[in-house]
Length: 346
Image (tube, rainbow, N blue to C red):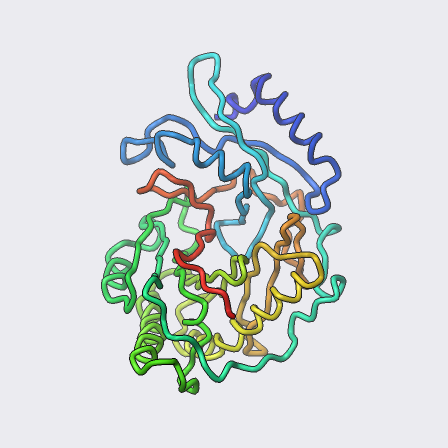
C-alpha cells in the first residue's frame, strides 16, 4: 500500500496539514500512512467497515491515540488528520498523518504546578447506582479469545455491551481487554456504608467482585492487560492491570478506590490551571505498591509525564497498528472507548 501514500494528491495534502500544524508544542515529527483501504479482510469486508467516513470524521475532530504495540501504557503520539482518496487505478483508501511525541517537548507534572501524588481522602458516601449505568467490554478476539469474554459479559452485574475490535497487529503482542465502568463503581470499597439505599451496596459489591473475577479469567493467558476505563469530568482515565499474578492484581484492585479519587483530584487540578487533560493513564508501581499517573495528554496534545516513556526516533517501528471496531463499522483506537454513561465524581 506504500504506493498509495506516495501519490501527488496525497503528498500535497500532507504538506498542507504539516504546514498548518507547524511547530506544534507536542510533536517532534510527522509521518503519514494508509489507515483504510477498500480491500476485503478475513471476513470478506474491508477492515473497519465499508465506509471510512465516520473514522475520518472522528480523527479530524478528536484525533486518535497512537500506541506502541497497542499498549495503552506506551504512547507514541496521535493520529491528527485523515482524508479519503481514490488512486488513479480506482483504489479507494484513507490516508492519515501521525504526530509523534518527542522527549524534548514532554512536560513534567511539576512544571505545570500539578502535584500528581497529593494525598486524598475517600468519600464517606456514594450515590445510589443509576438505572442508566452500563459496562462495556472492548477486545480483539484474535488476541484475547471470545469464549471467556462472552462468559464474563453474561455474568456482569450491570447491562453489558461487548464491542469487537481489531488491532491489526501481525503477531500477538498482548491480550488487551478494555472494561468501561461508571466512576463511582471504582471508588466504592467495603468500608463505605451509606449508599442511599440498601440495594445500592449490593450492586457496588457485585461490580467489585465481577472485576476481580476478570483477573481469574486472564491469569493463564499470555501477557494479559485489563484496562479499566472511566470518564472523569470529560477526561478518559485508565488504570492498567498487567499480567496474571492474582495476588498482585487483587492488591492493585484494593488500592483502586484511592487511585480513582486521586485521579479525580488530578484532573480537577489540570482544569483549574487552564490546561485540561483529555486522557490520563495510571500504572501500578510494582516496588512501591501504589498507583501513579504514568502520563497525561492535555487537550492541546502535549504529553505530561515524569517517566521516560518515549521511544527514540531511530527505533520507531516502521509499521504501526490502529485498533478498529470490527462489528459496528466504526473505528476504535486502542483503548480509547469511553463508558456508555460517564459519571462525574461529584
